[in-house]
Image (cartoon, rainbow, N blue to C red; front, side):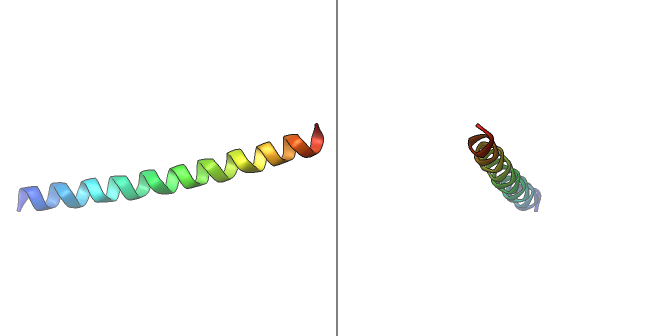
Length: 39
C-alpha cells in the first residue's frame, strides 16, 4: 500500500511540474515576442 501511495504522489508531482513548465514556457515566449515587437 505504501509504495502505491508513493508512486501516486510522485505522479502528481511530475504532472504539476509539467504544468508549471508549460506555463513558464508560455510566459517566456510571450515576453520574448513582446521584446521582439518593442525592440
